[in-house]
Length: 148
Image (cartoon, rainbow, N blue to C red; front, side):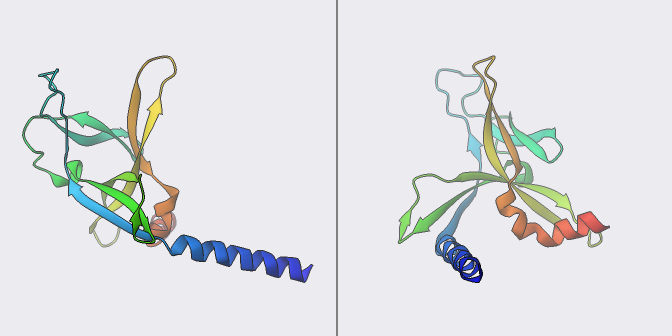
């Protein structure tokens, strides 16, 4: 019994070491600009994040001028590098600003973009939501939020 528990603990530690051996990289901030040469109403317009629900954002179409507020229009691309080789895919991040209770400082919740497909249509909508992967980075905020 003890030896199987010890083997389980060792396996968990080995898996954790493998995960932490990856190098995490981030590019940005950058804007998202629509390139649609066949649609003059959309071509050249910028996208920005707008409210879609509790701690949930979606992409909205703005003007052809760069957004004046970086907080609603700055995006990041996160990817991993293992053995000096960048991954072929990554995740698009939007940092949802919030005011920290107590200090009044502006902080950000990293939100990961996902596509939600509606099988009754040919539409997939974008949603930015807090990802559990980032919760460990937000421990102090969660503690403050949950117990105040």
